[in-house]
Length: 299
Image (cartoon, rainbow, N blue to C red; front, side):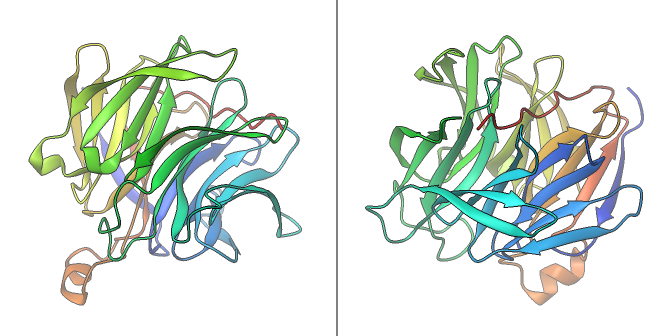
C-alpha cells in the first residue's frame, strides 16, 4: 500500500460542498456550494477559489462539449458561461411539485446529463420522503423522467464497459445498480450491490476508478469507501478529518488524486470548533488508483 495523504486544499468552508468535477482544460477543480448558492473553481496552481453566485440552490456542475458548463439549479437544468458569469435556463422539471430541488448530477458516456431531485430539507437529511425523481437531459435538450418516489437522489456513475449504471438514493442506505443501454440511455433491472454499515452512515456522492471499483462518500460518516460492485464487498476505507463528507472525484494531471467535498450545514459551534475544516475540499494522494475523466454534456 502506498501512503495515503490527505490535505485540505480549498478552505473557504462551504455550507454544502458537492459535485466535484475535474476540468482538464482549465487544470482546475469545479464544485458547488448548494445552499451557499455558488459554483466554485479551485486552481491548484494559484491555490485560489473563484466563485460565481447564482439565484437558487445549485447542486451539480458538469463540463459542456461546446465549452463552459451546465448546472442543476433549483429545479432547472441551466447553462453557465464562466467568464461572463451568465446563467441561462435550459428547461425545468418537477413542475407539479412546490418544494423540490435538484441534487446530484453527472454526464453519462454518451453525453447525456443525468440528475435527480429531492424535497427541500427541513434540517440536513430531514425532509418529506418520496418526493424526488431521476431525470436525464438529452443533447437535444429534451428531458426524460426515469422514475419517482426518490428520497435524496445522489451519487451516480457508469461501469467501465458502459453496461451498468450505479446510483444512490441516500435514505435507502444502499448503492444500487441498473442495466444500462448506452445507445438509448434507458435503465432497468434495479438491484442493491452494497448496504452501508451503521458507522458508514449515509451514502452520498460516488465515482468510479479505472479498475471498475466504486468510491462512495459517506455523509456523517467522515470517510470515503471503496467498493467492488461485482462482489458487493468493501475493499478500503479512507477517513477524513470532517464528518460531513459529501462527494468525491478523481483529478489532477493523470487523475491519480482524489478530491472530496464536505459540508458544514447543521453543525453547531462546538462541532465546528472540533472540525474547523468542515465545508472544505480535500485532496487525497497515494491511493494507488486513477479515476476516469468526466464526460462532457453533448448538447
